[in-house]
Image (cartoon, rainbow, N blue to C red; front, side):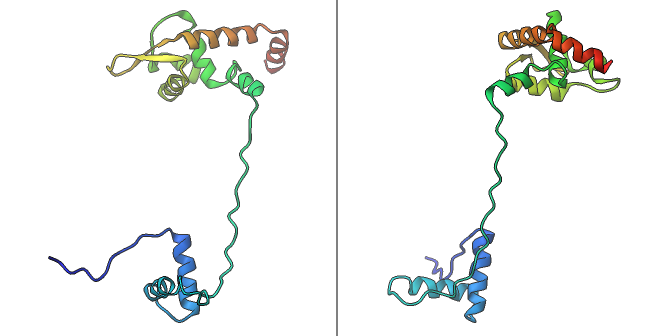
Length: 162
């Protein structure tokens, strides 16, 4: 039977840095500082030197309301929705069929993957290039996009662009 006298312990870097500063302030190695902390934790002896720790700044994530998110998802000018509009023909398409939407030499595999994750299209089979077809959820989103394209405000905006 082996007689192990030492073990390793992994801690996060922030804790390690605090521990290293406390050990340095009391002229100890990090392992001796841990040993000292464990031995003196229950008997009420003074704690090691307090080291100020910078507070962690939490960034507030930008929230998008349901109404504006629907507007984004139904915006006909986004690249995803331009790719989705091509499925209006009812055909089964692959990533190479979108040169007219994305530009010459570009394939739409990234956009098709995003549309698959969103649930608008489904991949058929496992042969490369992958082929995709419209789902019922995609058909309803396609309908909403086309309705938005028929709005007078959208037509005015398109006339200003062109």
